[in-house]
Length: 136
Image 1 (tube, rainbow, N blue to C red):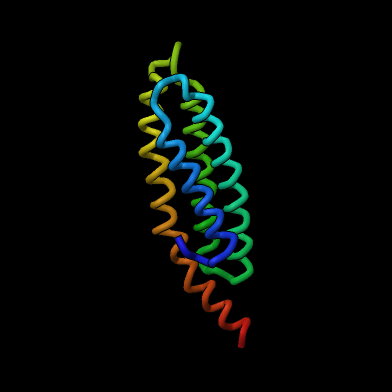
Image 2 (image 1 turned 90 degrees about the vertical axis):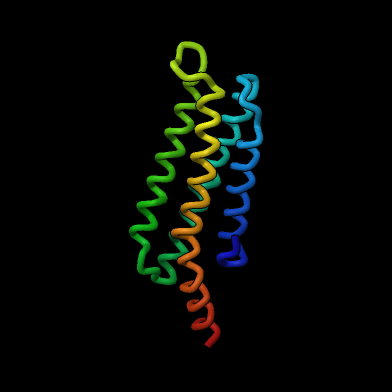
C-alpha cells in the first residue's frame, strides 16, 4: 500500500486496520456497538482521506480526478448503506446482526481493495512525476 510514502499511505493503513478490526469481530449481537464504532471511525477516516487524496490529485493535475472523486462519493454512500443496515439489523428486522455483519465483511474487504488496486495505484506514477519535476 505504497502510493506517496506519506499521508495517503498512512490513511490507507488506517482504513485497512479498521476494516480488519471490523472483520475480526464475532457475529454475535453483543459486538454490535464495537462494529458500529469501527464503521463510524472508518467513515470519518475515509472522508478525511478522500479529501486529502483529491487535494493532492488536484495539485498534480491528475487527469482522472473527476472520476476518482465520483468513486469516493459512491464509496461513502456504500459505507453509509452498510452503517444503516448494521444499525437496523436484529430484532424487528428480517436480517440478523450476524447475517448483515458477514455480508458487510465481504463488501468492506472488496470496497477497499478494489478501489485501491483499480484507482489509487494509478495515482502513483503521476505523484512520482510531480515530485521529479519539483526537484528539477
